[in-house]
Amino acid sequence: MGTPEFAVPSIKKLLEHHYDVVGVVTVPDKPAGRGQQLTQSSIKMFANQHQLHILQPEKLNDVMFVEQLKSLNPDLFVVVAFRILPPEVFMIPKFGSFNLHASLLPKYRGAAPINWAIIRGEMETGVTTFFLKESVDTGNIILQARVPIREDDTAGDLRDKLSDVGAEIVLHTVKMIELGKAVPKQQDDTLASPAPKIFKDDCKIDWKKNAQEVHNFIRGLSPRPCAYTLHDNTVLKVYRSRIVYEVKTGKPGEIIDTDHRLVVATQNDAIEILEIQQEGKKRLMAEEFLRGYRLQKGDTLTL
View (cartoon, one colour):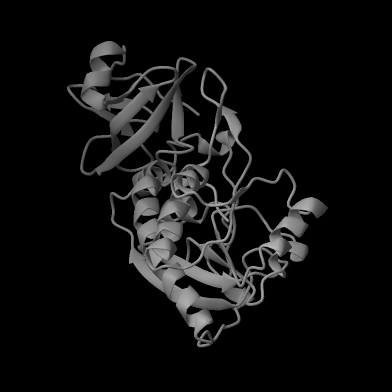
């Protein structure tokens, strides 16, 4: 059970090791893009390529869908980046259902663990497999793997790394369950932290924060949903940045250099914007962007 590209390495790994994937559950096709054409999830495209049986329920507690799952007589449900399963679904398999989560649980429970780990300035994160229970992301832990976060990692960079590491952990988890060697450990709820879904209004850059916080915010939201700022009511999306130390800064949000690079003042040091996009235009390196968009030293970027 899965939806985005993040889930593809896990199902690929299980097929490579000759596990019998009797069904693939993913979201219904959705309109996307300017033409609003129906688009398949990454998992559905992969499943079609491998001629796997696909289920796309609108509602997970639909009686017909639940009966379809039971008819497959599954031993185990493997869930990677999918929706919240109701008990009548996750209790169907003989050996239960487990989820791959992109954090070291109980830290960063919720929909956006990768984004929040970077935004909060973590130096390390990882992946966790755990058995499902009714409360989201609270089930007993089966396996974990740690992954370092580099200073310049974006959420997209980290997602790719965690996806590959996660596939290995999914494989090992299935093997342990198969051999009866899984020893689940209860989570310590006192160590839990939230990682809620991030909406567009949450993505505005606050230049009054310090440079490290702004840098973490930008890379933690790149490439999606993407941090943004305003210049004369024009939305500018910011994809990559770096901290510039020991420069004479102005007031927060003030542009202090546009000479072949785009440097913006924060509370303390400054941020150099490396990749940027005017809404509705192409994503560009800052030097190329400055040749086509009028920004001047002393201009101010705002919330």
